[in-house]
Amino acid sequence: MRYTESIAASAQALRAALPLMSRQRAALHPVTYAVWYEHVTAMNGALSRELMNLTQDGATLDEPQTWALYRRHIAELDEQMAATLARDVGEVLRGVSDCTDQAGQQVQHYARALQGWERALREAAPGQHVTVLAAALQGTRDMRHAVDSLVTRLEASRQEVASLRQEVHRARSEALLDPLTGLSNRRGFDRALADCVRCPEAGTPTAPCLLLGDVDDFAALRERLGPARLDEALRQVANTVRSIAQSHHLAARLEDDGFALLIPGAGLHEAYTLAEQLRHGVGQLQADPERRLSLSLGVTQLGGGETARDFLGRADQALRSSRAQGRNRVTVLAADERFAA
Image (cartoon, rainbow, N blue to C red; front, side, top):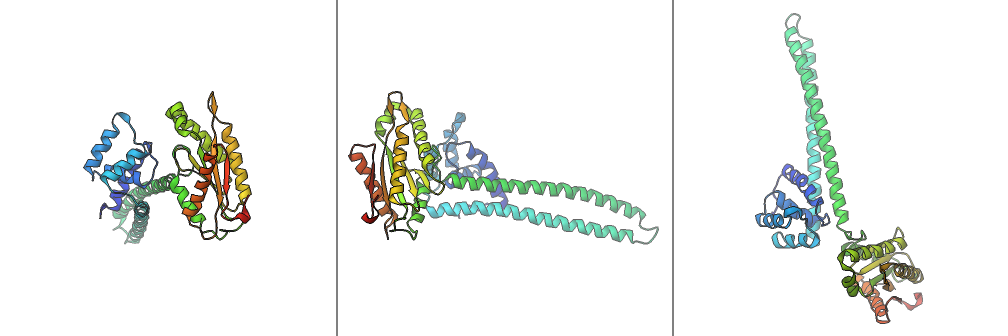
């Protein structure tokens, strides 16, 4: 077993790791937590040495650096390991909460016992209990004061646990988001796509539709704009995607210049209309004073019995067709010609 720390030690490591994680450029997800957990617990010297070199003079870790550290010094992450790590973090937090509950119950029991001793002293024979009673009463008052102080500290610990739990929940959510645009990332998109292909509407006129879009002439755009201005252009494209997406749609950034919109419960005509709105909206964006952006798009609808690979592959085929026909256009490929737009 790789991690053998107690609940208390794990909770202490979590408190130490979270502030360090939050100062980095990498998203907060199980891989990031594993890297910083092994660093703050001093269990992986080689990892700590490389991490300290990378972060000296105020430098921060980005996503590729964090993943590289994980692969070199911990292990290759698969889906099961990510789920296990996330579950372990939750168990640590639940354990800390249970400990505070037990401590509170013990304190209450001891306080009740003190009250019983107080009553017994009051019932002692006259002339034999005055001094003892006074001391017992003072001791009771002191204990009650100590109990109140401990309960306050326990409540503060409980609130800290709740805060840590929220941080972990936020970290897990952010693991599915693209850090540049705030849209879903490829992992979040793949999960939604896997759920989507299991829907009962597959192969019907209201089956889910998929829209894929690529920014045209991206390589030339990258060279012309430079990193900072290119990032700003991609954020503007993402905002345009977000502006046409409804609450039940999933908007995602799949690659540097690739975007997707997963549209459940829609016909191809509706999906085509959204694609044209997106193409027109991106066409209004000014990449630089001399040129506007443009987007090539492919649209398709989920066919009956199709896999996620089939669905995505046909959307990509439609996108390639748009690029081959001169870019800045929408191509629709229907799984069933009866439902063609």
